Length: 230
Image (cartoon, rainbow, N blue to C red; front, side, top):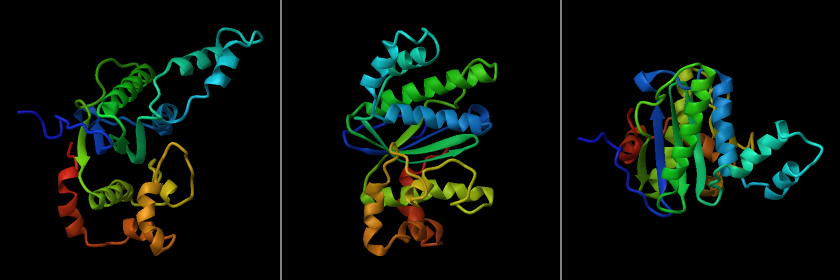
């Protein structure tokens, strides 16, 4: 029997909780460089390409074929999903990650995740002189079915940060939470759709929603079907 959430229901304009973890529960982000590389891949895939600028670099006769010119060629050829994928929230834990994504086309997530994870595995294996698969299995995905589920799922993802004993805001684990608090603005993260639900309640309302001990029993029941277990 297929594992839960291994068979995915893809839908245009659908919201999805995406999860994957390391094979044998091993760490996939060993240090800050690893998580930074993963986030940089996200940024490159979800930011508009400066095609005119890249072409100018490639055509610059003063530059050698390596270095900046080689990087420009790579970026120009690389897949881009800025018109297909919106990343609403994320959290990177040492041995797994959570993404909350909206896709515009029915198969956008499938293409996006294949590009992202293949590229990261190649980086990781090269850096740590290893071969073979890094992740436990193909990524898991479950579709969000209501606005209320979407809000509480974003809370669940950001509350993963509390497992390390520090406050959510000051957690050393990489996440989109600082974007939601207005402390950082990364254009490839799209928090506004969720924050709009809290706009009438004041600037700190989302923080209260995430950090306060609200009705977790209700929340657990509401998002039970979109929580992905490893």
